Amino acid sequence: MRAWTVHSPPEPPRASVPSAGKPAAEAPRRRKRPAGLVLVPERFSLLAALFPALWFLMHRMWLVLVIYLALAVLAAVLLPAGTGFYVGLAAQVLVGLHAQDLRRWTLARQGRPAVGVVLGRDEEAALLRALAARPDWARLEAGMEGRMA
Image (tube, rainbow, N blue to C red):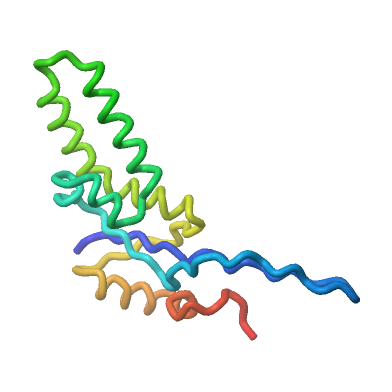
């Protein structure tokens, strides 16, 4: 069995209540984030180790990608000529080991905090187990607000 971190959907923006006689200002349109829970596995990521920039792009981890590229350029400029290969190889292994942790950090920065940990053999089994243990998460999975009517 594998451990999965469960991240809640972002909080919906609170609507401002217009004062009497004044129309509410139209809020700028924002892209809709995906609703539902996000499950992140606790494991080594081979794809992140082999193709880190593409893996960061695939998971929309822009800040992590910029930091990774800045460190790669800095290492290429500052390291002696003979050590570049070994440092690069070590960096790739570290990215593979910490890719899921960086993904959790990015989700938390986006307003999707970790709300629990669940065990399951795959993502679907883990999601079913999480929803069975916490029925209130079913509302989050359905994309509904956290309030009851």
